[in-house]
Image (tube, rainbow, N blue to C red; front, side):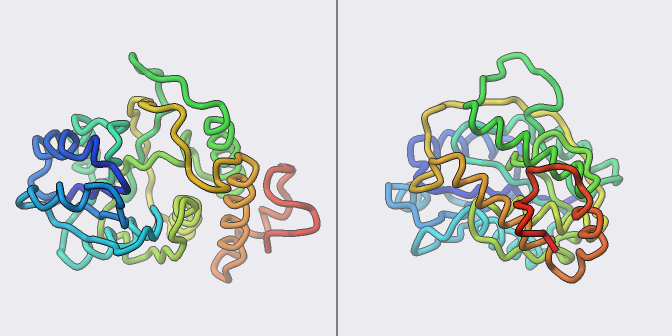
Length: 256
């Protein structure tokens, strides 16, 4: 099984070297997507031999970094791609856990969950992030029939051949929402595995208006509504229209 670990990065020069050093212990092939970093990330990457690199001239967003990583994995013939962040909130030593599940050959998406199992050393998440994650996760389970516990964890493994069935177009933080809708539409098999909940900097912000939880929640809802309106989702839309959840969308703005 040939796999690559993809690491999207934006201004992570404080942790870059340490994270890549640890990832090298578990992955023979690594891809870094430098999303327009304005710190010394680009310079530090010059001294990282044997690492595939994609550089964005400007900050295009987390979703675009994943879009580019997906295309890279597809074009290079990998069997699996594992994605993880570079802020030391994902533990590289968990990579073998994803590979072990991948070897069982009964999943297309292996999604890390910080809430599946209580683990020693877990951090307390910022209340607004936990609340939004829970609302979106509950919504997915109710409307899409998913059985997941963590909608936004970026520590995942993707069967690369399954990525041919996914068309991600959301370049920002809403990318996971579009992804989950399409995963259900395409019948991809999903498994969750526990990963530790780590917040190194609970004061870290999204930036701009996204620092406002209500703005973030409104944005996530809109991404979900837009994706559910796609023609291929009409069967699920019929169910969504009947959901009792008031979290889905305003009554004056139906999803389909």
